[in-house]
Picture (tube, rainbow, N blue to C red):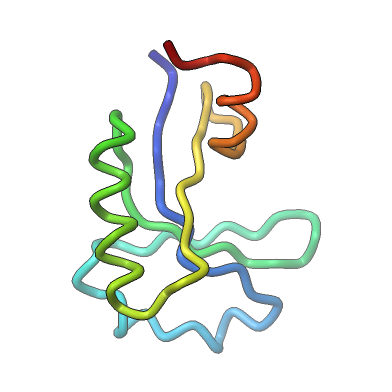
Length: 90
């Protein structure tokens, strides 16, 4: 509970360079700008890693080789690798 998986497609300093049309079939694109000046482009709101992985595979098949899964724990953005390091998964 409290976990939400998304697929980050890109992180850009110039968000106008991101072509949303290219990823339209993946779902609604969410933009988040963090304090580092990068705008992140994400899709999906999944409760399971399996669903997020399926979308990640689709994103990569569209040439988005840098795409990866990002996790929100109780609304806080974190990396999947950090959860694995903390033994959050059984």
